[in-house]
Amino acid sequence: MLYDLGAKNVAMAKDGQEALEAVRKGGIDVVISGITMRHINGIELHRILRCEQSTSDIPFVMVKFADDSSELVEEAASTGATLTKVPLDLELLNRKLAEALPRPTGR
Image 1 (cartoon, helix red, strand yellow):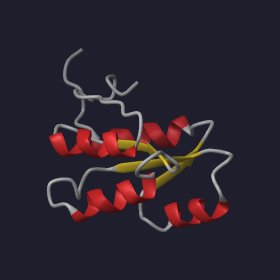
Image 2 (cartoon, helix red, strand yellow):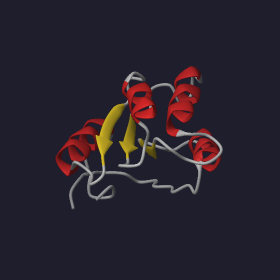
Image 3 (tube, one colour):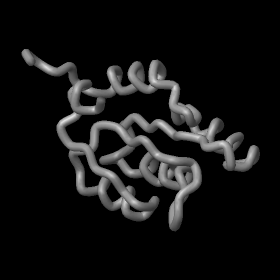
Image 4 (cartoon, one colour):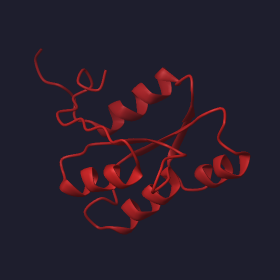
């Protein structure tokens, strides 16, 4: 799905620290993150990326899971990141990705 929307560089991370390192390397068009992750959670990741000039404008989508605490979900909602839940709202996700990614050319 990401490639169909024009993503050229898709990276997956096993935790928040690995995600931060991947984004800092560059070439990331959009971040899709869970709220709850090891080492650095999605809320902290979003805040760190917003404070760094090279990553501050990267669109950020946070995914909430059923077992995420209501306090964390409230805090995530207050960050300004797009928030969706599992099962994913694919229409919302498609719309946000389409806004963030350049349109694919001639396929």
